[in-house]
Structure formats: structure tokens, C-alpha cells
Length: 298
Ligand code: SAM
Image: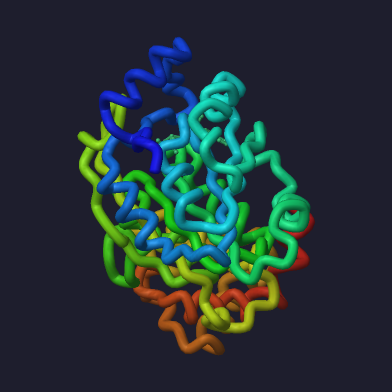
């Protein structure tokens, strides 16, 4: 087996050999601890039947561990300066494909067809650039990319918000949007010292596993997410007040919202943070008939 990339000495040697300098704007904090990488890969439960999408391979620290454990790895890297580095570091692995692309601009369904046709299982594993964690996860979920799970290193504060339960300070529209599709848990907390350069914040590895069925049948998922975002605009306000401010004006607005809350069996005096994902789903279905037409104009 080749020497691990993710040791301080080997990473330094690779960076120097290629004259690479970090770009903060791309969230470049590279892992330099093989134990953390082994742990991440263990949580991903890979096998030689599984395909992996990696986002942001950097110099390949995580990529090589994935290549050893999975059938195939397709790694999307935005920074063209890393391509020659990866060509060098990934040369021992014939099951790694590096794609020079911004993941947010990628046609993911087409990429799935192109790279993973016939695969029973594809997972996303990534140490994500922290500034775009949420849009990247939501892109996979909203576009209904047929992945079975995601193992993602991110800012701990974001992982806490994603996994939060109703009634807690961290619970909000992000918890609802992600928990609507996936079971979410923090798999491990990671100290700053395992990265170079060290980030300013603590990190966590989040495990997302697709729910067998969604928690409720929703007429329109976008509408559900708009309602949940609108319900947290002012956390201390009641759900009724927040919805009144966030839904478009119209005749009988308050009455329509009160009626919808009643049909959903939700007290108008409750705060958004006390509603479960199921309650938000029911409420959005009840509000949909009265407000969707209005909202789609705006
Ligand atoms: N996987 C490597 C590791 O763990 O050492 C690097 C992780 S580093 C936190 C994030 C990586 O994502 C960087 O290589 C960066 O260039 C890349 N990146 C940033 N934005 C991206 C995007 N929109 N699409 C693809 N890659 C991106």
C-alpha cells in the first residue's frame, strides 16, 4: 500500500513539490490525520460494490481512502491548480476519476448516468468547503439524486442545526428541509488541529441516510420550505404572527391562516420552533390551497 497523503510531512512535501498555495475563498482546509480519514470512511460503510461521489478532493487525502474501500470514486474539484497534483497523487488508483467542475454547476443526474450506471448504491463523501455546505447538500436533495446517503465534514454549528430537534435553539428551517428527506446524525466531532491550514471553527462529520418514506405526503416541497422559512423569521413570535408577516397580503388572510392551523391541529399561539417536521408538512398542505396561487405570482 502507498504512503498516506494525509500526514503533515507528506502533505507539506506534496504542496511544496507542486508550488501550491491555499485559497481561502475556496474553503481549502486539507485533512492531515489518517485516523480521522479512516473514521470517516468507516462511517460511510463502503464496500467494493459501492460508488462514491466526492466533492472537493483537494490533494486527494480523503480520495485515496475512498478509492481503497469503494468500487469507484468520482471527485469534483473546482480548482484547476489541483488537477496536476491529483494526477500525481492518484496515479496508484485506477478507480478514481477527477472532474474539473463546480459541483453547484454540475448536472448531477447526468453525472450519475455517466459514471454510475448499473451501481446499486452511490454515496456522497466529502470534506466540504464550509461556505457552501448547505447549497451543496440541498442541491442533491431537491434534485432528487438517487444517492443512499451522505457523510460530510462541515462546520459543527451547521451540523448541530441540521440535526436539531423541535424545541431547541438550533432547530429551524434548515433542520426541517434536510430532515424531511434524510435521517441526520452527528457521527463525530473533529478538532481544528487535523487540518492545514486550521479553520476558525470546530468541525463535525454528519451522516445523512435517506428516509424510506418521507414523514408526510407533501403537495409541494418548495412551498413547505417557504412556509417553514417564514415561520422562523422572528423566532420569538407565534406561528400565526410569523405567517401573517410572511404570506402575501389578501382578503381574509388572518382568518385563512387560523383556519389552516386549526385543520392541521396546531395552536396559533405556538412558536415555529415547537412544530415537528410532520406538523410543518400538514400545515403547508392546508395553506397551499389558499396561498399557493398568490405566492406564485410574486
Ligand atoms: N478533500 C480534501 C481534504 O479533505 O483534505 C480537501 C477539502 S477542502 C475543505 C474543500 C475542497 O473543495 C477544496 O479542494 C476546494 O478547492 C474544493 N471546492 C470548493 N468549492 C467547490 C465547488 N463549488 N465544487 C467543487 N469543489 C469545490
